[in-house]
Length: 154
Image 1 (tube, rainbow, N blue to C red):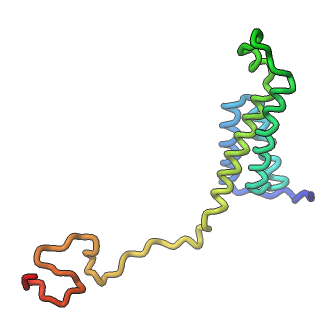
Image 2: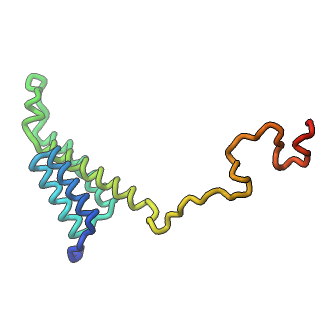
Image 3: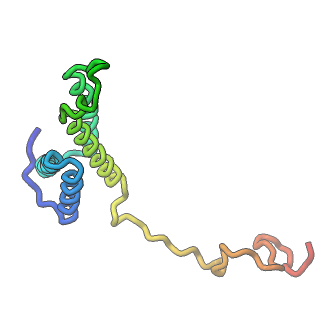
């Protein structure tokens, strides 16, 4: 694994990082801000592919039950909200996995879109129909493929 030299990101990317940091800080407090900083540094140094982000998300979600079970399950008598509030590690792991999943999916979708240069503008329909292709036929008009006179009874 070789490190690339840090790249200079375009303003749009910096704006995305700021938005990511704002949302993660709002949802996760200091831990969310640290996660956002880690993702930005990871993106600057390694530029992970969308699949790598999705794999990291999967690993976080797979590790989640392990961290819950590491403390041991409570007995029925001691089962309370304190069990969930007693350890923040599962919460932080779940939030990190969710953030990486969303980021990976967004990047995967963006990578699958065609480049802006190759997008073709919608061309107007050909003028052969006189611009009335989507309008209903008027009374007395026949099919364009009919050889009969539109005034003749059918």
